[in-house]
Amino acid sequence: MPKNSTTLTVISGTAEKSAACFLVRCDGKKILLDCGSDSITGAVPDLGKIGALDAIVLSHSHPDHIGGLTAKNLHAAANPPIYATPPVRSFLTPISIPTHNLIDLPLQG
Image (cartoon, rainbow, N blue to C red; front, side):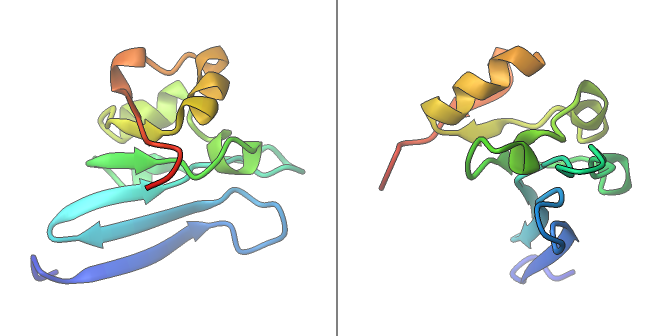
């Protein structure tokens, strides 16, 4: 892919309340928007199929948007920084996300 192109790939999240997970490729970077778990089956996207990520951005704290952030998935993604607002961060602590990977986003702006 040329360095100055942008693509959006739906990894999962097209069914009602399934695991939201979208890959943005922009200027040679790979950014994951959300990494959820399916609210019925508990299934999570396999980030091992995506490979190393430059960042993960979390939109909000519902399980179908953050439930796929497992130790296995983060390791498969090369432990990228995770961008989230402080309220979303508060939901990540119980699932053992390394705090050095977390970067605060402003609530707006």
